Length: 181
Image (tube, rainbow, N blue to C red; front, side, top):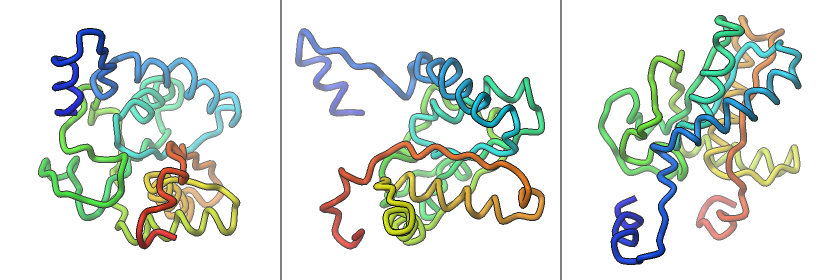
């Protein structure tokens, strides 16, 4: 973010979308993602899980769907080694795409019911599992999110429920990540 702001000052034609602070980020998920999830599950979704990166997906879906279904559980995912949203302290971690080291302007803790801390090694293993068993080339944030969703689905109250997660990043950018594959 700091480098982007420097470039904004240096380059006269530069534009910085400020996705962490841009209300259009959240609005896009209110108007599209949430509506698609509602339609695809016939309103039967019991829990929604997403990584806490820009916070647009999670806050947008929560904003749109909680009024329709107040009992919908909204779950945010962050690295166990860097539980920033729980502690307020940033620690460097190896799950790129979540916990950017600052609180996004569109983050609203009132829109999240539960935080799940996922260890990095578990997220990485989940990436490999998704590739091998499902043929999904997901990124590390998606591995963490999928693991959290599977764990949630294993809880007795969700055993017969519908748990949905968004896999927000691709594994292609991590093909050369040492130790991942």
